[in-house]
Image (cartoon, rainbow, N blue to C red; front, side):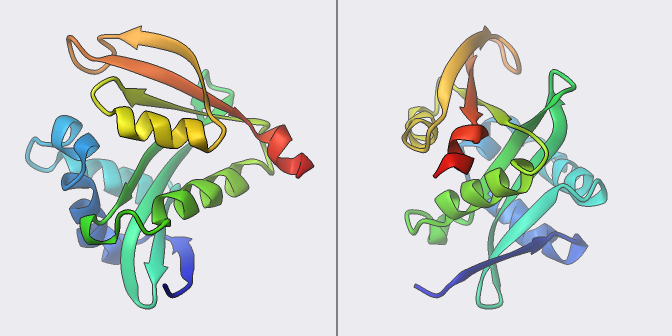
Amino acid sequence: MREITFSKANEQHLKDCRDALCRSTLGERYFSSQGSAEEAILEGIRQENLYVAFIGEECVGFTYIIPKGAFHSFPYLHIIAVKEEYRDRGIGKALLDYSENIVCEAADKLFLVVADYNPDAKRFYERNGYQQVGEIPNLYRPGVTEYMMEKDLQKKLLF
């Protein structure tokens, strides 16, 4: 596979990012109303907190980080999405590593939440050093529990 490169997103990437998000488990559950995915993506672009991954010239996914989104103190990984046809090729891992590298300069922890209906995503984060540190029932949707995950980025700097 060709090298994955990254850059800050701009509005030219909106369609590719929307496609990646809307065709994911996360997107189907939380961004299914008309325009909600675009609104979230545009918010990340405007805040300059959304980064896209490329293989060659093709935008294949993105990550959206909110710098002080967890407890007004720690970075929060809001969304990672990879285009459906590029999944299972290491792009999600590359986006996660890129996100961690961005935030580890300013913080020693990174937080995210993953829903109980998405056990594959939870296992992905656990394989990459995240630990469940809490459960929040009904956070975004009734009947859905979100698992709060945290990674100690200081350990990442030691290796």
